[in-house]
Image 1: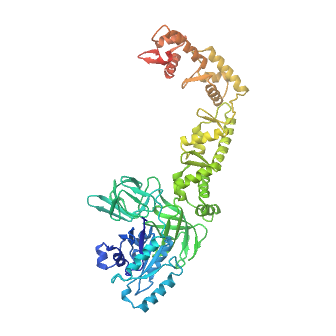
Image 2 (image 1 turned 60 degrees about the vertical axis):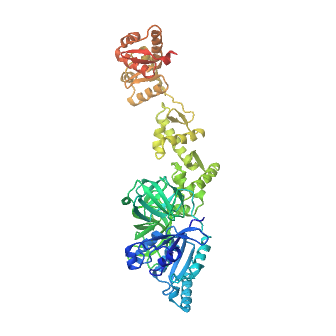
Image 3 (image 1 turned 90 degrees about the vertical axis):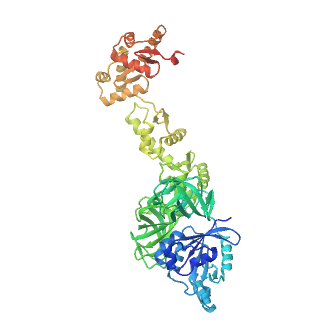
Length: 637
């Protein structure tokens, strides 16, 4: 069965709520004040059964100009509009404003219900129909059926039902795949259940027991139970009116305008880039930094308009803008929005979100405008490539690309697979990509850095992986950066040894001065195998500046000529091997070794014997038992 949301629209007292009751049998005015005053103040909701048995829902909106913000909260997400016009009054101010809003939201399916037929004669009715048809001739409802009805006598109701059935057959359903998004339009407490929210599910699906994220707070909440059309269900789908019983959150923590979504999918923002259309009927010229009321989903906030390609926007014109919010707002690429003038309040325009989490933009910048054109008009491949190349050193997930482009993840994966085959992007691991351009640019930066490094430090293997990551890819975690390095190594652009990166074929090469110092160091340490000179004594003997001398020590250590066994002590590798040989000979006869015995065995002092035996402990050649040492079993095998 098709999932369908109908919405009413029209001027106050034109009979919207009465018509909904005639169609559904339900009174949607539930507030005491609404019943006393005879007008709708808040949104009303009613389940609705079409002639073919299909279940749908009707959102009944208030018609008074003071409650347009409530009307807007209900109009977002509807599939089909019933524009209600009273036969005794015809087209009125809120008829026009509601119709403007419907067009701005992109609702393409509708019917005109000419109510209160019983209050006028046939001649008047024909005149009103002609007026309505003329008014609608320039709107998306130009070809919509006009059905005259009377909710009092029931005349025309059956015909209206049949027309709703006919139009609904052509409605395209909202996608049930992808992530869930539900804008909250009501919050209340129900005895025995706790916190309940309602809304129209815009995309994806939700199910009992699932954890969702409440935005903009970011709080995780769990679904206790679900209802659709007043029936308890285990799962709800996009295009359905849903009542969600939540656990883990109080009513005071939720309000209209909040969102429920798949965790880590949406995020709040203070800036959105968009294309804005100013209504031709607007009496206002929109100027840069004008304050406006911004409506998206069920949310309303004050905001400022930054005109990116002009100083003014005149009625009937459109252009690229950045909307700067006064509170955090949640949106998604492709979402429609409506703006109303700050004071006096009137609907002046609307448009479509291009970037729901935009950075601050500069006006009249050609590069910015070109980027917005690609984001708005480009095909999926172009949009993906733009997002990947705009931040070339970043690795971007499929989930993030879905948010930025407004496309389903499965479709993005298919496109990226083809782009990988076409060598436009590189797949580093499951669902994480960077552009080939970005990888090549990063490779150039790393190669230049390595050339400088090798020139400055000829005795070193190369910089550490972490040093390079922090310089060029600080937004990429270590694990993913290692995958990038693997790609570069496969392309023979770098070589990796342990934690160091170097240019292919690079070999540390001592110069003449370094070779003299190395010869001196090896000779002096060889002459004092188990009582080696300190680093400072060696430096003074070599008569080399401290920085250069430390480079030589680091080189000899990397080449495994020297081994650093404590912060201030180095031994020749051959000394350590000789020490092992003497220990093996000793343990062939004895089970335990004291520090004093070890000292005498090497003909050295405690100063050298202690750190040396601790080194052998560290590499598990020996191990300590009380004050003595024993040969480790694994070494005895």
